[in-house]
Image 1 (cartoon, rainbow, N blue to C red):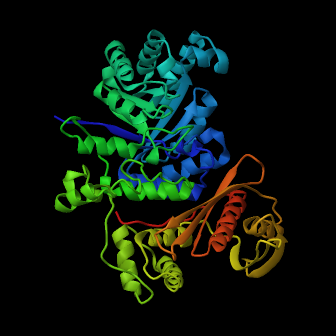
Image 2: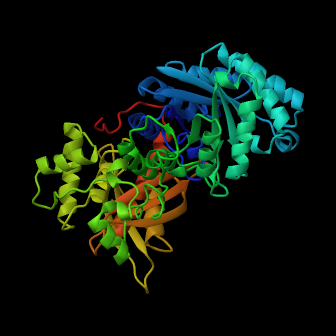
Length: 516
């Protein structure tokens, strides 16, 4: 009989630790709602004591996102645990996730604690967390490099103290599948009381083995897998949950396990996370990459035409990739527009539909055929954004091989039009300097990149950039247009709006509602 594997999604905690992937509260809520639609079992919403913003985001997710367990991460310090409970306490199902390192290299060089001190802290932390909630997870950071006897001793003690989930992380991605499977099997067979709890693994991808290690762990007794959407996260990232899920589904003949995930939401979730974090999914990424179901070889194409399973082990529809025969253009009406969005999973309010349709009409005057990628970009541009402080009204660029690039920018703020001009090393630099003159901010452009949406000469330019003002917190901005410089200006203003918004008192606002 198939056994269930629980999915613990840490996109909003470990995933956000990817350089430049900082999310504001509204963006986190959007992702959390989509994760609930995907039907992951647990959402690790953040690290509440890390910052007031992280606490507010975890608290908002706990209050607003239903049908899923919401976890808050905390160290073994009592103030961490108290803060985590304060953040998650109003969730339908609340979990406190506490951790401490168990490897000698961490104890000596990072924590500067003895094994006994770590042992005592672990037990005390679980007891403290247990006084708040029945659902307590304990993690032994850097478990893969820990002394196995000491690790097992700690696990037995925290289980006796009340932990309901014990997590064994390969924190630095050091393990390899066969070795890791034996490691997990030893724990499963050696630790007294392990049968009373859920054994979990959290694998990093430094050697490209996170998914393989996760699968090896499940085969040896683990029943919870921790990971992220698109595999994002610290350094080389985490196990990609979509790959774990589709491995179980595609290879049911080998893996006698299942998850409760709604696989048809996988692609949409991947696109949302990519869009809001600004981290593009590589074209050849398994399951959700652009080329995952593309066939260029003539032999492959011939086989797929005759029988899809000759070269496709997964049906694209399984992960929510669908093709529509409804072609949209400048003569298309609101009903056809709404119908196509519905097919992509979007259910907009009347006001959101009005704004999106107006943008669509402007785009259709410049672009002959509107693709699904274009429509998703419209949603990102017009709907999925914070209330703007500044709106781009006008842009003029003077540039060439023999003149100094100059940008004139006009922004609207609270009904007032503000205009400035500036010179730069290039047209994008000039745009950024002109916007800075208007806003009075002195931002640094950390990076800038462009991606083409669709094909042909009328393809949309999708600009993603990151800015910082203090050298620490980074804000991502995105802009789309058939004009690359217009897209760059929109992206920069979008990032500035996030910076301004982040320094206001936290407010709640609704994200795009999607069809269940």
